[in-house]
Structures are given as structure tokens and as C-alpha cells.
Image 1 (cartoon, rainbow, N blue to C red):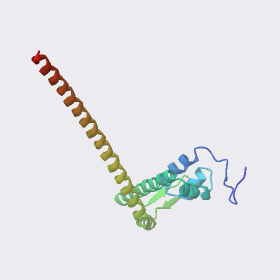
Image 2 (image 1 turned 180 degrees about the horizontal axis):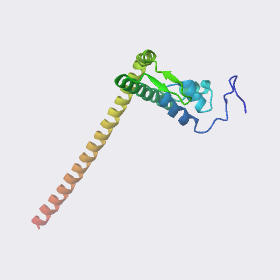
Image 3 (image 1 turned 180 degrees about the vertical axis):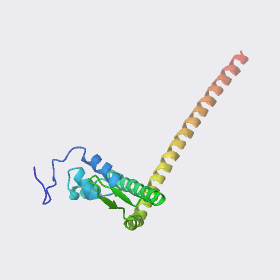
Image 4 (image 1 turned 90 degrees about the horizontal axis):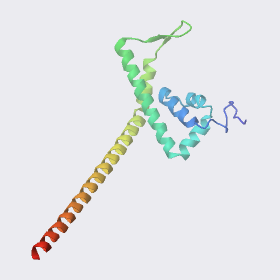
Length: 161
């Protein structure tokens, strides 16, 4: 199997690597770690993002989700005063509040753009659904009017006899 200079697969990647990558990206907001989790190179994920608009859309949605999670975690830590975590080996790791704020601030525009895009897509879908429902109601109304006209014509014809 061919690999790049870091040992990542260039091809022969798992068929579901995009799903693995996106799910991991939503959890971590870390592209390199997500590519590693999916057993693919970073260059492959960037190429797929450039070439596949649906994948790019999922990518940005995952990043938005990841930053929402970071924001919630930061808020929870600030509210509870939990600024350190105990690792499995017993050591303690300090949560870097300043870096978390910088990450959130740096990516806020991208996240807001994605949320706006999703909101707009939801609005378009809702409007299309409403329009389709109105069209069905109009069609039923026209059918009812046509049926009423035929009945009236029949009734008028039977009175003429």
C-alpha cells in the first residue's frame, strides 16, 4: 500500500473514511487528528473538500459543531471553576482558558457563516414545503369547484326535462 512521507495512506483508505473524518472533526475541531482517525492524509481530506461541495458543507458543519462544544465546555469550566483535569496516569493537566477563547474568537466568523447558511437552507426548505402545500390546496379547490360545476350542470339539465 502506498503511503505519504508521514506513513498515511494515499489510496486504499477505508470506504467510510469521510464519515469517520467528519465525526472526529465534530468532536475535536482538529483536522490532523481527524485525518489520522480516518487513516487518510491531510492532503486527501483537503482535496476532497475542494472537489466535493457536499463534503465541504459537512466539514464546515462539523467545525461549527466542534466550536459549539468547545464554547459549552469553556462555559461549564468557568461556571464550575474546573480548570484542571486528572489524566489516567494521575498527572494533572491545566485547561488553557486563554487559548480556548482565542480559538473561539478566531473561528467565530466561520461558525456564524455556517449557522447562517444552515438557517437559510432551512428557510428555503420550509418555504418550498409551504408552497407545495398551497399548490395542493389550490388543486383540491379547483377539483371541488369543477365537481360542483358538473353537478350544477347535471342538476340544471335534469330540471330542463
